[in-house]
Image 1 (spheres, rainbow, N blue to C red):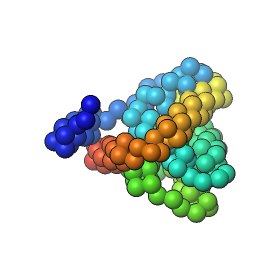
Image 2 (cartoon, rainbow, N blue to C red; image 1 turned 60 degrees about the horizontal axis):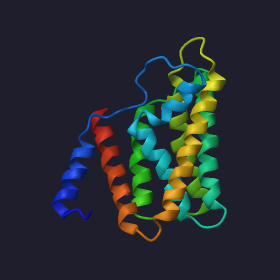
Image 3 (cartoon, rainbow, N blue to C red; image 1 turned 30 degrees about the horizontal axis):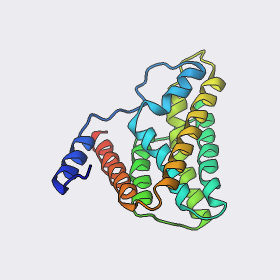
Amino acid sequence: MKLTSKQRVLFLALLTNLSPVFAHSGAGVEGLLAGIQHPFMGIDHLFVMLGVGVWAAMQQGRLRYLCPLAFLSAMAIGAVFAMQGGVLPLAEVWVACSVVVMGFLVGRSITLTTSISLGLLMVLAVAHGYVHAAELSVGVDAQRYALGFLLSTAVLHGIGFLAGQALQTSRPIVSAFGIICVATGINLLVSL
């Protein structure tokens, strides 16, 4: 099915005007299953995790695999920081900005040097790890919860990577995903 320009604009407008579904509602979360579920509960996390995979598929050589690994590693660091009582000012703003950044990187097929790529992903990932872990309730098994959200993140990276591989010849779809991410991220920022 081919959409007209008006239909595409309407679709983007509807998508970006949905109420932001943040995964960080403040509700208590527990254990491995809650950790596994968490990255799927907010469009902010979902788009960034898939976007990291898609963007990794666009890279060359070992950077294709280092991007998701760097993100996961830095996400774990952000989670440990939160679990140890650290405070990351404006964490939700960082997460919303990460949706915009990933959308721009994917939508424009941006390639950067290895060190800049990994550094950028790690900065974004720290915020995601922080907000995931900042919601832990007292007495919750933090290690199982963290393992759960790291596993889900890895799965979403993998899905994004496979989609990026499959869509390498379909640039309009990848561009549309990038545009949707940017528009959604801006909407999330405005909603904060």
